[in-house]
Image (cartoon, rainbow, N blue to C red; front, side, top):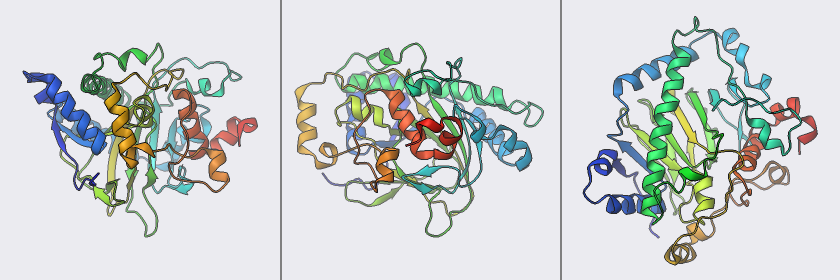
Length: 349
């Protein structure tokens, strides 16, 4: 397989108006099979709203530290809230970024609930509205709009794989849990990364970039390919859930951020109920044959678990968990060991 050298651009309007939607869907699946990234335009989320969302995000990061730290993530047993630069680890390396992490809100389960990943359901911490007027309403609207967009894209992928359009939507269950990151990247110091190389954990990631580049995807030849910002477009990439559920036909592409200047972005990670199985869906035999014929797909693994990192392993050579919640729990264990130690000390590897 020849490594990709650029990120394809896809117009969602072509799907919505196509006389041959199955052909569009098959082409999108082929892009996802080969690249795992694309830039989505004509998606229907109006530019005025996206500008307003970015303004709210930059206003949040401009707040004094003493205001933001009132909702600091280390105080949340649900791994939500603001975090200062250097708070997150990716592949056991420190990320150079400031961020606000939020998730779908559900009533929390008892603190001794088993298995532990079910304890990830909970509330988001919010600042008083006076700090950034309209902030919570704008973020909630963004989540609603992007969630609907992600659901539509998953339906297209299902069609392109020869499945019923609602195949993936039907597994989302009664308490879907998606994640949202609002991120401020200062210029990346030499030898570091805004976020180190990794896979995403959910079904799909929809990323809104601002004017500054820095996002890079790793092609099969081991070359980092820039993912340039396109005004008001979303960058879409695949997560480890789709990799598991398609038997590695749609693999999560490794990516990172090294930012030459101040950069803002916001990433939405589309996820289902924590109890959703990652067992592969039934696909036609040619998909398994294509995986077997491609080293990139056949050998693709998953992000290392915390205990594997402590044993000196790293990268994406691990095995998947049986359910989404455990896969997400593994992410928090390896990325926020200090938060785990504070709230779940008996569960620290």
